[in-house]
Image (tube, rainbow, N blue to C red; front, side, top):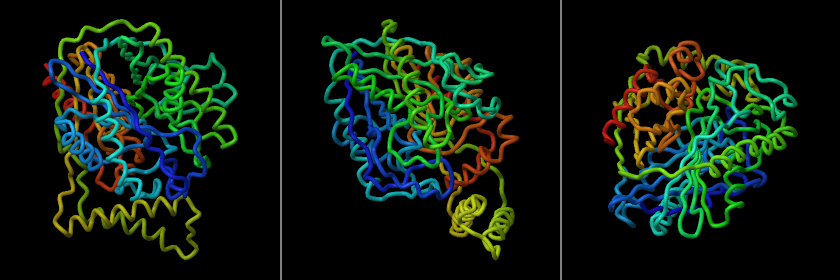
Amino acid sequence: MRFGFHKIDITPRLGVELCGFGPFLNRGAIAVRDRLWARAMAVEHDGRQAVVVSCDLAGICQETTDSARLLVHGATGLPPAAMLVSCTHTHSGPNTSELRIGWGEYDPPYMELLPQRLAAAAIGAIERLTEGRLLYAETPCEGIGLNREYDSNAPPLDEVLRETWRPAKPELTDTTCHVVAVEGDGGLLGFLSCFGCHPVCCCADTRFIHGDFVGVATNLLEHEHPGSVGLFLQGAEGDVNSCVVHKPAEEALPALDVITARYANAVRHGMQHAKPLEMDALRYVTARICFSRARWSEENLRDRLAADEEILHTPDATDEDYDFRMAAVRAVSLRRILRQIENGEALNRPVEVQAIRIGPLAFLASPFETFQAIKNEVRKRARSRIPLVLSLCNDYRGYAPDRVAFDRSDYVADLVPLICGHLPFDRLHEELPAQLLAIEAQLY
């Protein structure tokens, strides 16, 4: 096996709006707390290569991924299906999707540069391929996540900052993280960690650029191992928040350091106890699937739009009101969908799912914010010895909730798809596990 690592700075200029926490918040960045990176790991086995890129971004769009893949293919010959782009889901970086409405203004100059920077990270990793060995550990990682759907009563800040704090229902979160280390003749070449949790430790009032606790922890661990490059791959974080999110700004940044330390300690422990993995194969496969959508008729869409326009056209309406701004998000999206219908455009864009197998490791990736129950089902039925279910890969399509959350939550079922500019999905809780397992089967 040969491995290569490289990273490229993707920090935006100050003033760019940050993505997350609510509609039309005008969160223009005022300072850089920690720089954002695109980090890449290249793998080669028996002449076949694959590249995984991890970005300190909330998400990405398929067009950006495809553009970066074409640049890498032109420079190295790497097949597009052999490159996976994962996002950490920081809410302290820029909005990278023109389709996402209200969650940070889209910045065209930044987006012109982003595909080139992602490609440069991947190409640099391929150029640095060298002999190495892969080591792996699954290690305890506790006191970080809280399931916001089923265990939503977050305790006070002073309580969760105690080292002994644990959520009431830890089984509804990730309680371990997966750690991969790559060693060469000169020592540690790079490392990778995977954990499922919204990484956000800040709030709507914070305007500092950083990679949230997973990005900051990775920076710290790289500093401890000069010359190494570390990747974070986001797991099933759809229904899991950090235990300190949405606290006041003056409390958020100190809390960020505490949670960063907890995660860094877990990864550090995994790197210290990782054991070699046998490498027998490198495989990859992608598929683009039209998942089932909600069957909203044109009449239904117009009724929904009329209800939102009634809010927007109230005589004493103000754009300082949260409900008014949310109505604006829905109205913009509904008008866009209605124009697509009028123009005869297809409403159900295919969604890419991807699988990469590195020996006993399998990355099973989709562009959704996947819920824990879906991850648990896939891992239970997967063929691979170490199946890792990844969220926020190659594109961003909103949530993949389990059946219970889908039935009871308009936010994850209906609203977030509209924020992303498309109709809601209908049966992801059934269809996504089946598709991930189907492409995993093609790895063998």
